[in-house]
Amino acid sequence: MAETNANPSPPSAYHLLLQLEQQFDQLLETIEVAASLYEQQLPATWVFHQTTPSPDWLRKALFDMWHEQDQDGRETRNYIAVVAANDELLMAIGAVNQAKANFSNLLQHIKQAFPQALSDAKSRLPKRHPHVDEVLRRNGLARLHLKQSWRQLPIAQAPVSRVRFAWYSSGRSIKRLSVQEAEHKLLQLDTDAPHIRIQLRKLAGIPSGEVLAQVQTQAPLMRANLFFTDPLDDGHTRRALNAAMPIFVPDNNQRLPHINLPTPQPPTTRTRARRRDEKLEQEVFLPSLRVYRYR
Image (tube, rainbow, N blue to C red; front, top):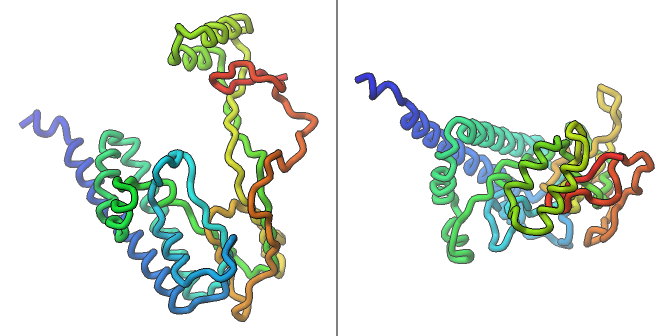
């Protein structure tokens, strides 16, 4: 008997996966409700790259949770748009966001508590998606893109007079690394390769207490500035956000706010000038890890 109680993990993992399937079903149901409501109402809509959006464009955007062939796992497909939504549609979109948050939270919990169950979840969930047959025909393998399934839909908390879109091409994430961490990462690469040995020697030649910076250049993204018709209670007059998914704004007698037309493609150079106080050296220190020294 003692052995039976000693390892309660499998039923817990099993129950969590059942819960996850229920959360996923709930997410799909809320998307169906919101998409159907949109198609009934056909509110005023602006979609990037589309002069006249088809009535089912929102359905396609919200149900798109798939890895395309040759798609980088870190990349997500964007659906840049603005919808003038009435209270009923705003509530339906809010329900989608809540279902996305519930799904994401449970997924993170499973990832931490039972990482081995995550691959099981990834194979089970796609079968529940209404478009799985079509995706299987197209791609041969239905792989769920978890980030695309849980990313939130921006909702403006007050009426908006104009929306300014602009490409942002200088996004970088910088992670601080110790010399020991950098060495550990290099040792995980091919240490027989001359270029790795050179980098290990360079690393050995700097103080062991020095802090280094690992830089990840992020893909260009569209940013939106929402300008509110009236200042919010906290005094703010605008809100900036990443515009990867449709933005829902309170409808103004079925009218959209004023929207600028961004360039079809992101610029090839940085959109923001380098700050004079930029703290990293210009030249990469450990190219294989994209690691720089601070000035």
